[in-house]
Length: 210
Image (cartoon, rainbow, N blue to C red; front, side, top):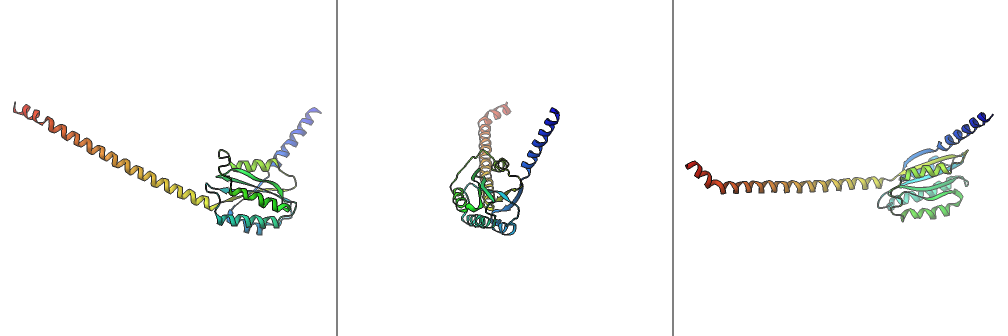
């Protein structure tokens, strides 16, 4: 009997773990959030959504800010009042800005969203993506579509390319300076050899005479 109870307990634990791992993922560009909200919602199934936003060193541009705010406003309108969303960031900043909140409380969600424009280097040593999924697992709800919508930020990619280009130019400049310096050292070395040769030339001539 005791053995059967252990098996039953392990089975229940396994079911719970599998349930917590059932978190759907959607990856879109930040500027496509408006289109996604219009196409994918409303949904008959209860929703619990974690909006995960990529941020860069300089935050979010005014253009992307428009897409983000308008997209979230539309999403909140198309969700059922009892559906919940959370908002977090990854990349330049890694944190959860808004805990799971019902869509009916849209004023609070939009107010808290403004924090995304002021946070700087939040939890730099952590991974915002891992934090988001752990958060989603901790608050997993049965009989609900638990989702993470990951929004990539084109601006961050552009900054990364620009930074790489700048680093390449700096490396090339340093290499050029190093090559010039090395060439200068070779020239000086050659000059030193020439001077040394001239200084011993009389001695060499004396040896030849003898």
